[in-house]
Length: 220
Image 1 (cartoon, rainbow, N blue to C red):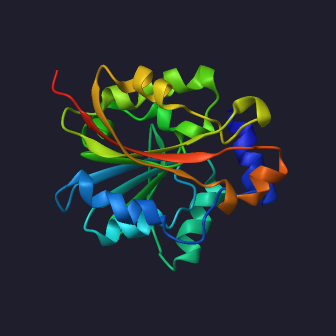
Image 2: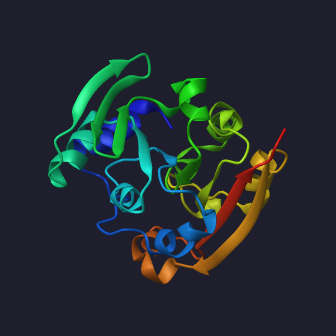
Image 3: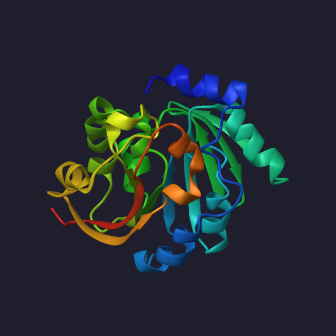
């Protein structure tokens, strides 16, 4: 999805994808990743997600990446955090305690930054991208994470012909095609969520499931 699309969504306040609570499935399944305290956790397309606060409370160093400077500013202001800032080739870095958010494009993160992430949490990135961009995202981000990196990926599955994304439907077969050679992938949870998402039903969607995956990068 084009950068301008997301920037406009934030500018106009069309952020129905933002949740005002920590994702319950994150709280339920994150312990399965078994990351040591102090591990750096990548959160791509982070928005102003409260999930980053929760991950930091678990003892992790959170690295969010977000295209919208407005979203970054709102995250720190709404959570009463005063970040220090510095610039790099990847963008402007906002740092407060164990939370760092880069205002930039996750596809431009350098090798050292990605190699330094022992974990990841992908709730909103993969499903935000149209099919032609998902392969590039996998190659530019997931393929450069280190062996042993572990984390959670959440997707949605619904009849794609019933609604234009984002969010897009990313079926299990595609997740395994994108990542199966380099990652061990376990399906932790699959549940019908359409009743809890009436705005999707209003758009004509007849079936919607959310799927939780635990993934670990294989040794090369």
